[in-house]
Length: 435
Ligand code: CMX
Image (cartoon, rainbow, N blue to C red; front, side, top):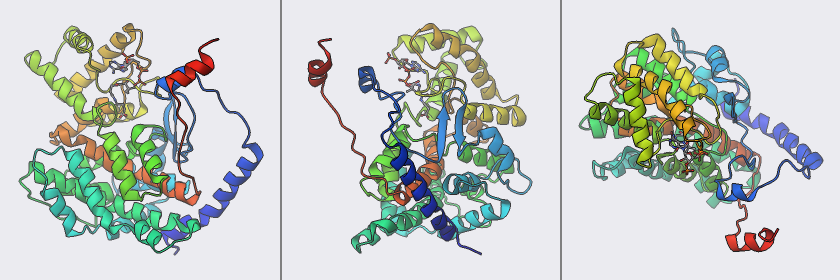
């Protein structure tokens, strides 16, 4: 039986040729124009990157190598007796551009379990941080401490040929993915369970083992985590975390450095941190209203107050999406099936009924609909993972699958250093301000 790495190496040559031929034939084709407003507006709508693993459609949402989330829920292998896809499967799909069968997914699971050993200094470095250090900061520090294991760093120092860069990148990416759940669980148990750590169970799948190390052995929670780890993997290439990982990787920084950089972006409140902010926002609203299920009118007033205070309503809006995020819908379906009467789910549902209209009324919010972060916290809360400061770490563990699959392809396709140009307002005015 071929090793997973050999299987991947066979894909490289034909893809390299495909890309090279395409550039040779169409490299001069103009695919868009840039407006001055886009330079000041966060480059919205500019196609400026190649990311093969997924593509975001404003109306339809994310597709991974062409497959939507409902399609993947149907087609990807499941844990025995389970209904949700195994994230090992979506990783395989993104990297190999092929749907895996049950056996292949088991091999990915086993491969990661074999790589999951963490050198003891990583735990010591995390333990040196004060307990009030945000979990995302601890996570980034843990990732950087893991960098002592970098294969790329070693290979580069030994003078590796550039045509082989993908190989140590593959090793680093696979090792990092395998080790992140343990690092994340370590932070969680350290902060919230008096450092009472739980040993991994390598007989479980990657998410199941992660849930186990966090301290959750309820099979329904394992299913939730499989879904969570599948839907957060990737969101094409321009979002802050994916773009950062690609950008930093383009300097031939290794997977550890690139991924840690991206995680600092994910930790921003306009990006991944929004999932903890949603819960904080809902709890603050509930506290202000004296508990219980707020009425639609009370929620509307609270939303208006949030906007009047010059704050964003977390979990709503998106830079690309213009409809309800299918990742939100997948989580809502899960809640409807497993916890239709959960108090917090009732609030989240009511918030969904109220917020879009008010955001629309502002006349400026381009997408009034909920994104992935509007729902994830409620599901975690339901099963007792109540420490919302930790939520973005879960998002980060999942994001490793898409962004590191992309990083491997960046190296396999020999993508160059990313270095766009910048200009100044003065120069723009000189060039275009007189018309
Ligand atoms: N609440 C209040 N105002 C909002 C808003 C929201 N949820 N979403 C957008 N706006 C505002 C913007 O702040 C901006 O205001 P100004 O013109 O005063 O600066 C205006 O509406 C136009 O913004 P936009 O073009 O609609 O949105 P952007 O592409 O600039 O920003 C995003 C996208 C996600 C940062 C924004 O919608 C937001 O801040 N949402 C809340 C935070 C959030 O949920 N982030 C998670 C996104 C998903 C993820 O990455 O995990």
